[in-house]
Image 1 (spheres, protein in one colour):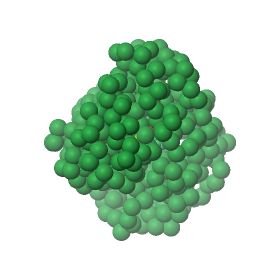
Image 2 (tube, helix red, strand yellow; image 1 turned 30 degrees about the vertical axis):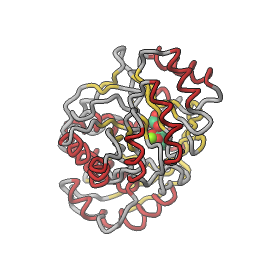
Image 3 (spheres, helix red, strand yellow; image 1 turned 90 degrees about the vertical axis):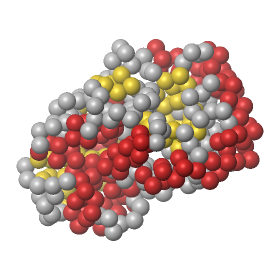
Image 4 (cartoon, helix red, strand yellow; image 1 turned 180 degrees about the horizontal axis):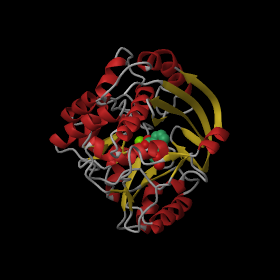
Length: 368
Ligand code: OSB
Ligand code: MG
C-alpha cells in the first residue's frame, strides 16, 4: 500500500459543555484531523494535542509543524505494509507522540480497511463491547457535582471519575460518596499536588475510591513511588507514561498499581498494545483514557479498549456527551448495560461528515 496523499486540518468544534480540569477549562475542542490516501483506500486519524501545552508539551501548532515538516515527508510516496514500517520511517523524530499517533492512526484505519477487517480485530481485540465510564470536570460546587454525577449515573455509566484540584477535592468527594454509597468512583488530579500534600491526599482513603489518577508532577515516577505507601487508594498514572518502558519502570518502582492508556500520549496504537501486553504480563490492570475526542479518535479508542487487558471501565463515553454534531458518524451510543458496542465494520467503522468537517475547519493543507 503506497501512501500517496495526505490532508491535514486544524478544526474547532464547540463542546456541548465546558470541561474544567486542574489545568483550565476547555469550551471548544481544538485538534488536528489527518486524512491519508493510499491507493484507493482512505484512513483518518485524530491528533489529540490540545490548543495549549497544558496536559502535555504538544499543541495543535507543534503537531502541525512536526507532521508537515518531519513526518509526512518521510512517509509520502512510500510503500507500507505494516505499522512497524511506518513507525520506522519516523523513528528519527524524538517525542512528539501525539503527532506520531495521529499518523499511525490514519494509516491503521486505511490498512484495516484495505484488508476488510475492523480495527479492533486488526489490533487483537476480543471484546464486542467496552465498559464505559465518564470523566466529570470540576464543578462550581459540591452540590453541582452531585447533580452531574446523578445525571451520568442515570444514563447508565459504570463509574464516575471526578476531576479534583486543591480547594475542590475532599469536600467534593465526600458529598458525592454520601449520595452514591455504592458507585464506583475515582479521582483525577492532573498533577495538581506535590509530595508535601501526602497527608491531605490520604484523607481521600475513607471514600473507597478505585484509584487516584496522576496526583503529582506530570513527568514524575519517583515521588509517586514515595506517595504510594502513604495512601490506601491505588495510584494510576496518566501524564507520566509515554512509552512501554515508562510503564515498566513505574511498575517496578511501585509508582502505580494501574495504568491509563491513551494512544496519543503513547505515540500510537502499536505502542499502546505493547504497553497493554506488558501490563497484562505483570498483572497490572489498564483502562482506556480519553481526550474529548471526536468520533474519529473515539473510534480508535474503542478499538483499543476491546483488547482483553482493558479490565476497568475507561473514559470512552457516548459521543452525545461531547458534541451536538460530530464530524464522523455513526455516533457511539451507550447500551442499557453501560457499555459501548465495538464496530465490526472495516477500519474504525466511522465515516466522515465531509460537509460539517469543512465547516469546522480552521486551516487545511494538502501534501503529496
Ligand atoms: O486527564 O484524562 C485526562 C481530557 C483532556 C485532557 C486530559 C484528560 C481528559 C479527560 C477527559 O479526563 C476524558 C474524556 O474524553 O471524556
Ligand atoms: Mg488523566
